[in-house]
Amino acid sequence: MTSPLHLDFPHSWQAEILAHRPLILPPRSFTYPHEAEEVERGALHAMVKPASAAPFLATFALGFADAAVPTGLWSCPHPDELCAVSGGYAFVVSTLDPGRFTQIAFRPVLEVRPLPDHNLLLFTGHYALLAWGASGLAWQTERLSSEGLRITEIRGHELFGFGWDLLTDREVPFVVDLETGRHSGPHSDSTR
Image 1: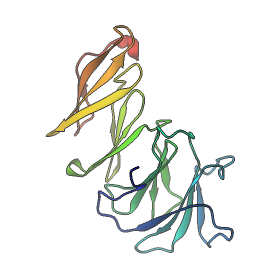
Image 2 (image 1 turned 90 degrees about the horizontal axis):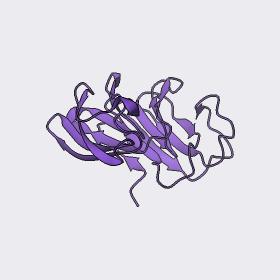
Image 3 (image 1 turned 90 degrees about the vertical axis):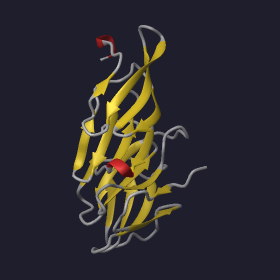
Image 4 (image 1 turned 180 degrees about the horizontal axis):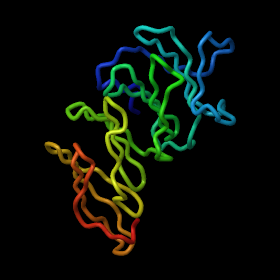
């Protein structure tokens, strides 16, 4: 089993994943997303201690109760941001202003991959990739697959992988430029 805490980028905060929500809530407590229903069931709870702000309890609603999707905390390219993934639902939160957050568009996120050499946090969905940088969303690819992506290698500024193509019933290769998110390789309009 891998660690639920991934600190590949320099960060200004500390965090501890809690086994359950405290009975007495601390003075600062935030729930993500704000409009979540039944956030308690399977939620990820973390006590976050920012470098220059008061600690707060962060509760992240569970996306899917499936061991195939990630759950944990990741440092981000911006040192004051924290990424939390709860059952494939991913959130990037400002630790200095916890009310400010972004929920990553993929539901679910299937993999979170830190790329410190490129200053990106990479999210893999069923059909596309999304990269988060120090200034927020860096890029999102167009659809790369009919269903399912497999990353095989990162070489220089290029990411190599395969996506399954519905029409040919086989995997087709793709290459993504990590600076722009543009991709090359076989791509069928029918997979859009």
